[in-house]
Image (cartoon, rainbow, N blue to C red; front, side, top):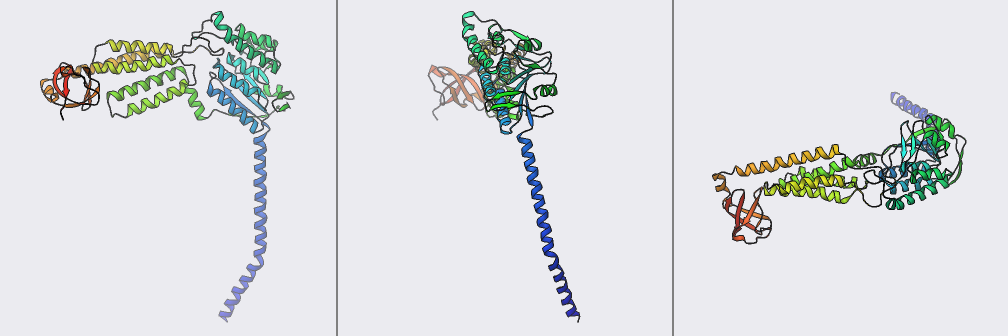
Length: 464
């Protein structure tokens, strides 16, 4: 009976499970269906929020260069892709490269999303290149206490250009400004004066002269005043619904911020100097590795930074020449002429690094290496170079008779042709050497030390 009872119990249990299994499955299917519906609804809601019902805000508060131009291009693409109601560019710039300015103007004129350039906060300015960018937006708006204009070509040092030189650059910029003003319905004459006469306007003057559209106290005031207005975009007319619109800030990527930081003229100059010194130190101490690696990376970063700036490559050449002369000065151990040449070349290079002759950019502000950076860097270079040279002279003058005995007979490698004077590497040291009997010995050949004359070794070809 117990066995049968046990069987009956299991059968009864199995039967009970059989009655509830279909119901459980139906509940599970209903639950999963509900979750799926909620997930899809949430996804669609998120997609809808991402695609519209918001404005994208970016801040451009630096010199206009390829980095800022690329940032604006990315923002326009993002706003179009997300079907944003509006793209807001909060602007504060002293100007920048004309080529980058043209790119940004083109992006704003051809954008399928309505755009507004908001010169803010109070105290900000849209100078030179900024005037072109503000004029190119669907709406140009200013905060109280801001100014716009002075988009006129000047020389590298800020001086006025000669009339014949200014003509081509000015007329090219003026023609672009006229085209922008015509397309956006702004006061062409007054905007052209910012180029031809370097005129600047306060926010009140700019509104009165129809250079910009209106003044906004803040973003909320800006959105409220834009609400209901109709604009023409590359995709056709759009009526704005902006009152209470959600504003999403789009920041620069890490790469963009990094490139913008190193594109500062002073930082680019320092990177160039550190790179050159790193290579020189590596040549002083072959195998040290760290100076060479740091120097190579710094040089590469310097060239990347200089690619975003109006650089004069003659200045770069002078700075690198200064490093080469410093290295040679240490090798000849203190004649002084090469060291003086290194200092002169370095200072000239720093002064010329961003000097531009000829037809300048009509939108570029005055740019150059600060004397507060150049002079201390020169002092450090002179002090460090003098210390290295004096240390080498002292080291070599400390050569005693026993040291001379150690050097005598050593075999080394010629590093620069002995014709008859050059350099020879003995173990880890570079020595100034003179070929015995004034014979010419080529680089790479093995030589043996046959004499020591002060700081110079006398060598002859080895027969090994």
